[in-house]
Image (cartoon, rainbow, N blue to C red; front, side):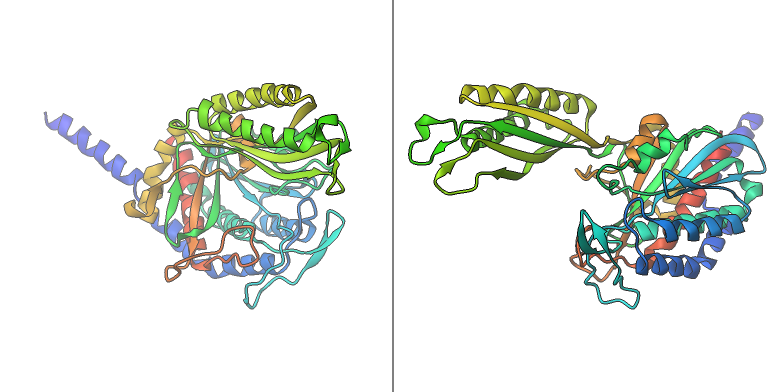
Amino acid sequence: MKHLTFILILLGCNIIQSQTADTELMTMSELIEAKVIEWRRDFHQNPELSNREFKTAKKIATHLKSLGFQVTENVAKTGVVGILEGSTKGKTVALRADIDALPVTERVDIPFKSVVRSTFMDKEVGVSHACGHDTHTAILMGVAEVLSKSKEKIKGTVKFIFQPAEEGPPPGEEGGAKLMIKEGVLKNPDVDVIFGLHINSGTPVGTIRYKPGGTMAAVERFVIDVKGEQTHGSAPWTGVDPILISAKIIDGLQTIISRESPLVDEAAVITVGKITSGVRFNIIPEDAEMIGTVRTLDPKMRGLIIRRMNEMVPAIAKAYGGQAKITFQNNTSITYNDPALVTQMLPTMKAIAGDNNVVLSKATTGGEDFSYFQEKVPGFYFFLGGKALDTIDAPSHHTPDFYIDESGLVLGVKVMSQMTIDYLNAQ
């Protein structure tokens, strides 16, 4: 009985230990907080659009090389990959940060405000980090520095992936996570799991939000081309009205959501965001074009919705005497957090942020190309608080007034560092 009690005490100690933050890691993270903020401000003031992140990539590579990492540049055009070998052989954890900015003109009055101008889709635009990728990059550079000084704690390998073009490559170009995977970023060494985070302007500093399973949506862009028969607006019976057909198609598509999709399982959205047709008030045009998006969080629902859209669109057009075809372009897959991996890493998160600050959340219908990594290896993607505690309403991401409280960055460094070590040491 005494032996059994001793064993139980030892097991209990191990459990407690696995749920305790490493004091040395936490201290190192706090010591480089100012440096992380300085990096973030530099990236913020010098943003670069997707597949054009040349200066950003150079700064990242220089930092990783200074830490003694094995560094590969120009991955998927402008991506940077760094490899850190631990003290012993083991599994490989990948950590990913996205590095691109958006064609958004910043309005926030801060000392490091972006005044950069560039060209996007043949238009001159302002450029800013209106989604927080500058913070992701700075956080991961901080994690790299902390872990480089903790090699003796690492039982395996850490692969740092600084990914370009998360917001999507320019038309006619490849880019983002898809291209990194195509070029072998998850190989040599083979990645076992991948972790990523996203700053969130609406989540209070000090808080982490997560969800097992589908946490962000698969994003499909669709185009519907409708063909009618042009005629005078005074005599619609002498032609076929593609605008009327478009209206009926839109109405029909919404019934797929409201009457056919099991919304008690997960949310789903079909949105038509643009309709183009006609040139004059008294002419029924020959054709119409609709462009929209589908957002799904469950693979079966995704398959059902796309199948029914393919069936419904031409059928509705035919019923009104016209023709229509629909084409899809996949922008992201479902950002799917492996439930077992989430369960394994939650104690680490809670040990660092506090039980009450790690919050189970609902899914979001936004999309993330981190999902493509998760199709290949188990992954865990979570949200890090960036909202000032004295703020009531925070501007949304992708807007000119987007703002992040930098005091939240150090928690990102701590959590990513500890998760990496805890995962590798548990294997």
